Length: 219
Image (cartoon, rainbow, N blue to C red; front, side, top):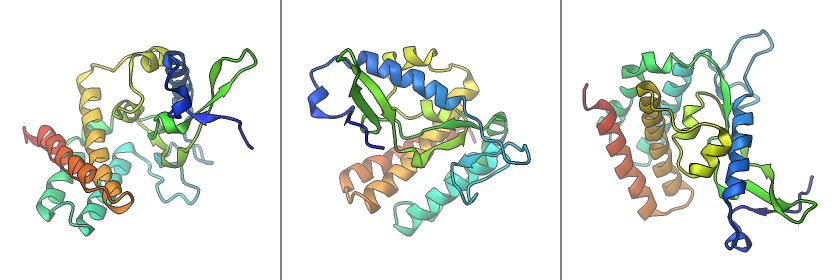
């Protein structure tokens, strides 16, 4: 279907107060997170929303380990990571296996929430409203904290709409750091292979090492 809309990042919206739009996105994000992955046999399944079942895992820990493995393999092939870095990174899902195993419910997460993926419409009163959230090709069934580890939409208005702030529980904070490491790895890969942007690629490479050092400093 065609939706007469513009992305939330469109220049025509630069002069408006986006606070209520962020609140609405937060409300919808919570609804997304309430969707669960259950197989036809009734089993809980973790991983990508993928029709062929390639990323279909019985535990969150197994999926996260596979996600890390894919990331380091891609970066190693492009010489973005050394073998020594890859080996250190792959210790992370092992070190924190018990924290990852705390996640027993496969909740749907968007994992690519940012303004270009939010379509804005005008409602019957002529006011701006959220018409759709699109681009769910990176959606994952797993830990909702993975959404909160990504900074692109996280502000006070979003959190107010969602109905909660950042969890301050130690294990939740640590898991957000683990997911942050994952997205630094894939950030360096994407900005090398897709966007050919060496400056941003190197930013993500540096952030990868920072996140890694923080996670393994006591091990």
